[in-house]
Length: 277
Ligand code: SF4
Image 1: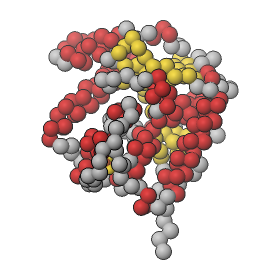
Image 2: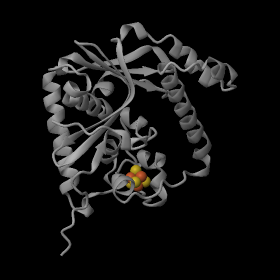
Image 3: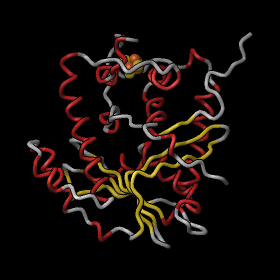
Image 4: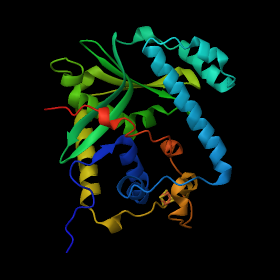
C-alpha cells in the first residue's frame, strides 16, 4: 500500500495557493500539487487578460524602481500606454509621508505552519519602533469593500505572517498585532485606499484558521480535491480544458471577482529568508 503523503511536509503554502484551494480544490491540485503547466486561455480571453497582467507587472516594476531610488521618469514619459501613465500619475500622489520611515520593498518571508511553511511576499513594508504598515498595490478595476478587504486570504496571510515574524523582520523586541495594519492602494481609486487594522484576537483566529486549513488540505485523500460548483469561477479558469464541468452556475462573491489575479507566488522564493524561532 502506498503511504506516501500527497503533500510532503515542508510544502510551501501562500495566500494564492490557499485562496485557490478555498475556491476550487481541484484547481489547487492541478496547479500546486500536480504542477500542470498553465494552459492557454480561450482565444477571446487571451489578449485582454495578458495585456492587463503585463501592464500590472510593469506598473509594479516601476514602483519598485522608484522606491529603490532609480530614476524612471524618462521611461514613464516615453510610454504610449495611456492607462499606465494615468496609474503612474495617481501613484505620484501616494501619501508617502503617512508611512513609517523604515521601508523594505518586495520583502519575502517564510514562517512555519505545523509541518509546512507559509510564504508571503510584500510589495512594501514600512515600520518604525511602534508600528508596521503593509502596502499592497492593486491595479484592479474595482476596489474591495471594507468587509472583503478585512476577510480576504491575502490580508489574513500577510498580517499573520508579519505578526508571527515581526520580532525578526522589524527588529522590534515585541511587536503586537495591534501595531500592524495593511493598506490596499488602488491605481484606479487612489483617493480611497482600504486600510485594515489587526489585533491579538484576529491573530489568534488567523492562526487557528490557517493551521486548520493547511491540516485539512494535507490530510485529505486525493478524491477530496473536488471541482468547484461555481460555474462562474470555471469561466475565468485556464484549466477548463483539464476539467470541464457543466453544473449550473452560482453567484460569486465580490472577492471571487478577483479570484484570478496573477499568481506571482514562488517567483523569487529562493531568496525568501527562512526565519528561526
Ligand atoms: S475549470 Fe472549474 S473545476 Fe476545473 S479547475 Fe478550473 S475552477 Fe476548478
